[in-house]
Image (cartoon, one colour):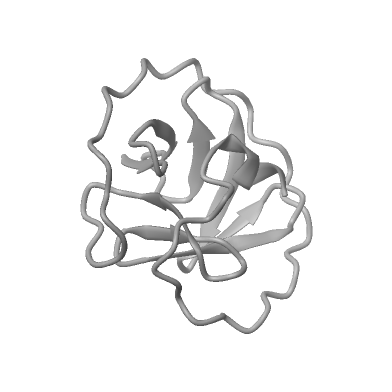
Length: 119
């Protein structure tokens, strides 16, 4: 299980044991991974994971993981909340064609919370 921490060090989401499904800590399924690309269940392309960082569509850093390297200064991690009972995953929508990947920024995204998954 890989945890996503936001710019304040709070645990926001995690990748489940299947290494594809992404859940919020309250148990709501919000996205899935396909070859390090992140898609909402609607099929919308949200960003990608690289070197332990989650990037948004603009190349800004949204979340970090325990093994993130490089990038901006990472905040102190808070205690992980207790995971809620996992909800049923929705049917995956048709994947949006991913845009050309922008240059990675050293800046934090202004959406470093659950709203990232609602775009």
